[in-house]
Length: 239
Image (cartoon, rainbow, N blue to C red; front, top):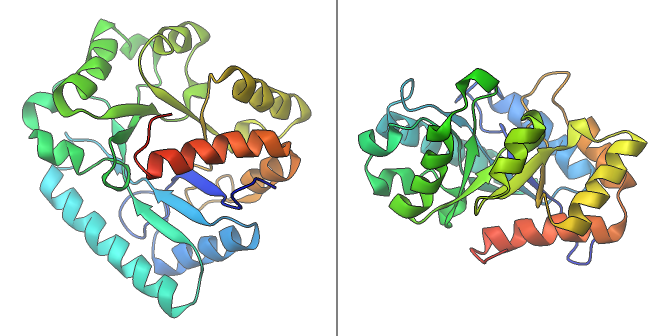
């Protein structure tokens, strides 16, 4: 097990009733108990945010209410897991013109200088504007992008992304096989991917089974690498 003893899930739709993740508080608590059973100590709660669909002020207020409800229920049910408020922000080039900088910073991971960003999955949606927008996140807001589930994107686009000052997160569900575990070990040795998440959505295909498999199979040094990076980000340190 890793030296710090912390197991951090850096990408989870665990907040109740705010997106297509957990439908209600009962679903959230069920998954939190599952998480506690496999040793998870911290979960970064990342509800989807799309500024054309979700006006920023109502989104932040709904997130606050959902977060406070979950924190209260965690306490009353004596579940020993920390929940960190964040968002999975779908990158739209005009969001920087429409949303004040301080409000974009409210979407960051636990008040740090890091923000989890989802990119368009369709290759036809990629253009120079995507890369320009990633640069604008840092230049306009001072936030460093964390690219969510980077394994979903084409090799060519991943190579372009790795030329940028970004951090990269992968979903555990893609790496449960022997070859997948070897890939994660290679990522850690080459420092090409820094974070591991469940991307849990409260359905049969997105529960903690895959995350548990990966954690149980990874060498201790590799777990140390991913969890130390996650801890550093939550402490707002450079990685």
